[in-house]
Length: 357
Image (cartoon, rainbow, N blue to C red; front, top):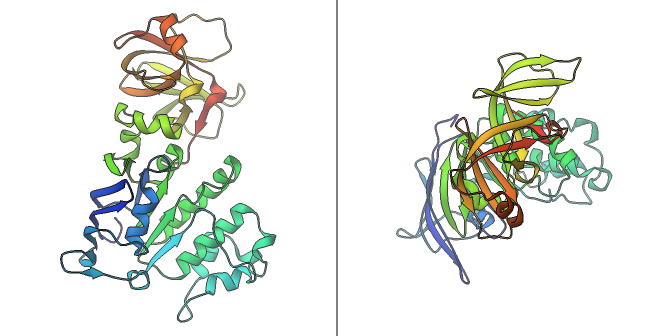
């Protein structure tokens, strides 16, 4: 973490029949909690912000204890000084953008850095109704940063935006990460967002953290498959560029002794590229020679097979890279797939997406 601050979370919260139990330490600049709806992500964030009190345990920001059941400490939200960005980017409709950013500040504070980083100066005098969804969310982030928080809490800030707007907002989140020397806790159900932004990730399911680690190592492993089935995984690979052909509109990436073809973009030879492909966009074949238009046919071995849900989920090892694949039970039976089977993963180049690095 940039300023060396560690956030210690060790608490329990029961809501009806649901129980959230957390025991972890956040040490990176951006920590992402990833899980499906109802897994406890927002409850976790509310306990950290102080808007919801745990039943027992302790929460500490560096050396400062924010909550401790044993010593009956529970700092209110205003004394924790955390910025909070909600999913919907709530703004006061009767106030201009500038007034929204200044609202609630106990004294005049510097907000120019947030305004510049998020590029919202041109609509400071507009009202929320005059803004697009992406613009409103940028204003909400600027308002949270203008409070000069010690940490920024983001509760699925891109969930209400369509895919095109998400792609436009992610670079701004990178600018925030690079400009402001504060830790960020990012809640999401989207693998691609965690991969694009986080330095460390925690997988949460049914109120429990089931795995954690570096995003590119954690989210492509078989351990992530239960979450993948619920959130819609985008397999993520970090691969070096071996060839670039602008005239033909393609780039070759090295995956072991095989190659992956993606649409052309201006990336240099040797650069490491993060790419993603959805599990349902991968076709499984037992033979390498297929009379189809897909450019990518990669040989791999089935390491894990899950048939407990509506679909069959496979984890396929390709030169030390894992791919999660979603197929029908009928296809599994027809191909007679089992753990240890050698298969070919067929992927169209257009189904492979370049992630922000």
